[in-house]
Length: 277
Image 1: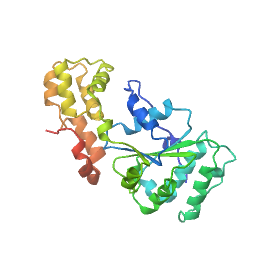
Image 2: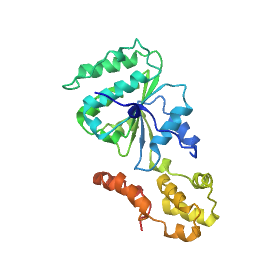
Image 3: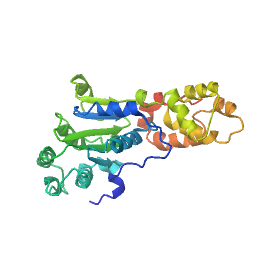
Image 4: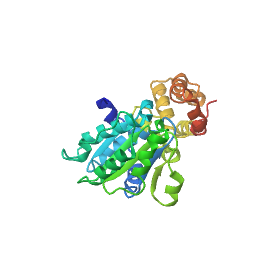
């Protein structure tokens, strides 16, 4: 199986990114946990947050996989993971990871055990980020992840970015204090962050308008970005903000593509999206 460079490369950081140091520090504090989970509906900036974090904390080498629906096949999943690990600067050329092969027939427990042993033998600690981990739903695909996080690995930090809780023992890990998690409530923009996002795009609003926009979007980063695009040069920002809702064409198109096309995800995430009147 061939995996392109784009599948193992973090997203680029946009010039106007609003830095979120408190969230970066929250991720730092989870270094000793078996699993880090960044879980929120579409448009909350999960991927950008993690991409910014791994760039800001470049002292720890990172392997990154952008998962796709086809990666629910465990053969593709572990093929992509191996490709990312082999490209990671923290994996030396003599590592056993370069010699492991994913069977074309099935992924056996022996392969997963060999993978874990090879990770434990690395000379430095690395991160493995699996973005869009909601693509993984089959028991076979999740089995290896459970093996990896059975206890904190000495040389690996596992991070999942997902739209919903994965089929893993998340509640038990939370109880055992083995889980570092960021949710939609933490990822939503504060009023100060929303104002900074607008200012960096040359948009200055009266305090009342900023407050109303914050209330209408609930701090949903994607909603704020859509509003900013429409507010550029708008002759009457106040009337636009008063009428701004989820049936704006760019917002509706985004929701149709990211959510409504996946009806099950919509039912889980609709309560987090701002008022669509």
